[in-house]
Length: 389
Image (cartoon, rainbow, N blue to C red; front, side, top):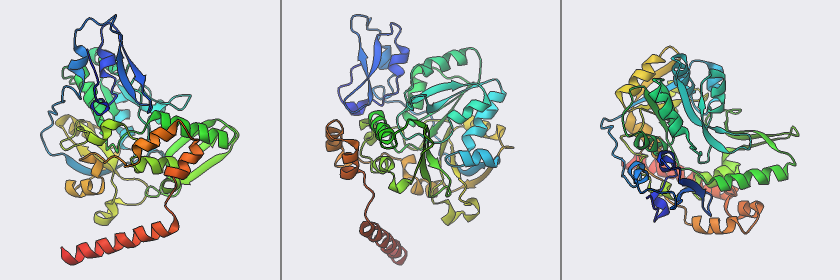
């Protein structure tokens, strides 16, 4: 039976829970708010399927051996592009699958603003999956649902983090020609417990339940995105991402899952057929691709990914770009982040002090002097590189 001796050896993909023939594995939340498998030994028959499908314990062998093709892209539908985190390419891919009577699996908010994976079969519902959610998604039984759809001969597009896609592949244990996958350039997944406490803090502060949350609002452009939160009392909370306490903690890597710091799936070659990302830094090398409305970086990792993209070519603008340049400006494509030195203390404080105090201690934006120093240091570093290159 599956046994997680070190937290870093479990990515929380739910493959073990989905595969168990006796339903004796349940994903339970630990003190930090992350899911880990717990086995009911009275029901376990020691079939070891759970160990067999674990992408971490199995040390998933990525069959994608070719260097990806890098593309700058966006959806030609201006409204969909506006509603999306970057260029809106996911929607074009998903709409084509639905046009083939296929199904989509991806992450969205439920009624309680928990992020969960779900099945989508109509285009209108794709809005649930659009835009980034910076918290780990609960896969639930969607691997099993996807397998059922694949067995029925339906085309399936499954989207998620690289480890979730690896978990799907190991769970299925065979190749399906009707399966298409997209992973994201994952920075790491924050704790759902931290997000829940942040949500409770906001609802208490604004005296109302949250009705809508957008992590990547383009109200002032794509590159300087805002976090926008609407409440049932018509209050609106908007903060630039660099001033938003939750995003500050996320970008500081202070409350990510332990496995994220040693991720073996955010690498080149990639796990999925297509990788979706923001094309940060695009304007410096490809100014024609930067109108600040959102430019997607696509990595075409397999022949199947190329075929899927070509099927949508009438809905997407694409231009081939330099892979090394793209990775330089979005390093999470090819490597894991480092743990924050205050991570352990942050989680100790999480249950013992108010979120307001957590913000003051860990999640405050840098003061003006620090920001000025940072900008000056950045300018000097660029000058130094130009002089000595």
